[in-house]
Image (tube, rainbow, N blue to C red; front, side, top):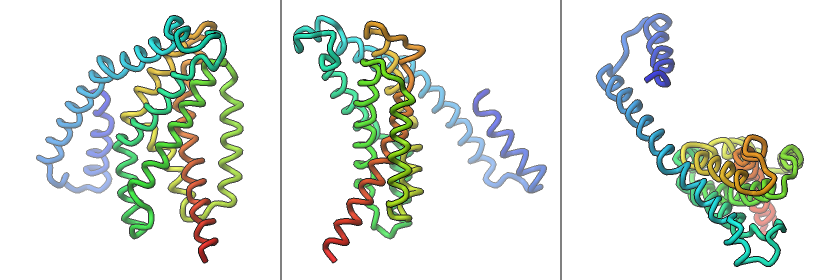
Length: 239
């Protein structure tokens, strides 16, 4: 209720004191506010009881020394954690496909573009970007390399792509990076990063555990811009 109160106060305050009009459909607004509070409460409980523990558990199991020794001869090598990279990529793809914010953006992009931008096409391209992001992000945690190097190189690539990409796709590509890191993706990704950094020798969860969400925000921009550039080249070739 404390979390929702500022939004309600702001909207009601503007409606009464700035617009000076009664709140339309007051009963529906009250009912909707109650549903939001109940929904947020259940969602937060779900995160605490299911998603965070699952992310931690998977990271611990896949990076367990006994499990690693069964699948790779040198447990100290970064290659020994290949199951972690694969799992991170797959969970990134799956959670992005299920992301409600991305679904909403894909529907609107399809409507505005007159069907040129396919709903599933956009979702899959963004999901591929998140999959690559989490695979690389878990590699960074395992190797302990600085986060800023990856982000710096990533945004240099984005800037170069932006110069050459079709103008109509640039804003959508940038938005795709933002909506990806939302309700479904963030809790699992955060739990995976914290869990992995807690079990890999020499890693500190406070320093190395965070950063996966930054990867998940960046790489969809790269993949959407790349997809647009490839499609433009193919169309030119056909012509």
